[in-house]
Image (tube, rainbow, N blue to C red; front, side, top):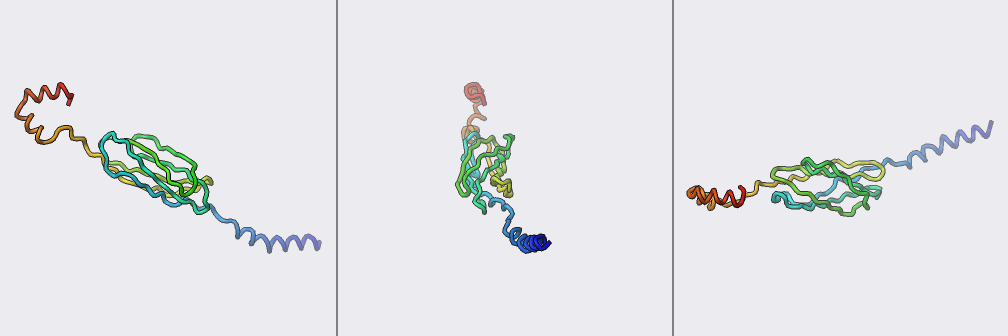
Length: 147
């Protein structure tokens, strides 16, 4: 009976100490995204990003390009090691979003970067005005360049 009471007392005294040392898995920091915010249509754009995990766990990144492309997840990589990925766009405005996830499943919030891809101008206003006054040349230009 003394043995049972001694074990019970040890459990009561030691359990809070053991439980206190167990810490929750903290998520990685909000990724820092760097890359262009304006681009030409069809241009391949490189974006780099980095996040740090408080427990120094390896990190994967999930990327939403903001267009019809599916979300991609890459990694895992060493915490704090900058990574990059590329994408191209058509005319429009896009919100690129990236989040970090450590190997234990803790996720950061989404970081975002806005990108603007203006409409390509094929001919300058000078040429446009010139062709307005020269309909035959304009038709020839259309046949050659398909505009």
